Amino acid sequence: MTLTPDQPLTAELPGAAILVSVCRLLMWALVSAIGYSMLMTGSRGACAGRMTSGDAPVEPSTGTAGTDQSCVQLLLTPSPFVYVVLMAIVLVGVVVASRKVSTEADLQRILNRVAIFSAAFAVFCLVVSQIWFALIPLDGWNGQGTFFTPYLVGDVELRVIR
Image (cartoon, rainbow, N blue to C red):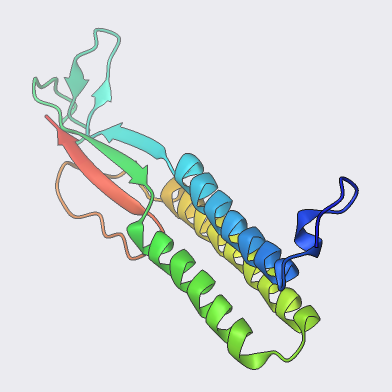
């Protein structure tokens, strides 16, 4: 059997539509991971004292000028947990799709849903991390204490600058 120029290659391969669906799923997951990586960066900072017109720090409690002022900088970066979950979504989706379907149409439907779910998970993690990061209170920071980051969908690094 030979191919003619008008005949696509996938028409000859058995299960070509399934391979295309799996490749589409992998591309969705890859694009989701890359998009998450590119958009999951942020930085915020604050200092414990207020600056006067002479750029000398003023202690808020006493109102006197001091020389040492501590500042905090928070850096938001992607979490490795999200990449592991994206990989697990793809693997579980492919395994479930290969075991529980009886027709090619059902398989394609499940793989398409898994692709949409992987993209939705990445967008959810991105939105939750950015909103949560923006809501971290830095105004009342006095140079001491701990910033607790309970979410696994974004890593926050704390730098204290004295």
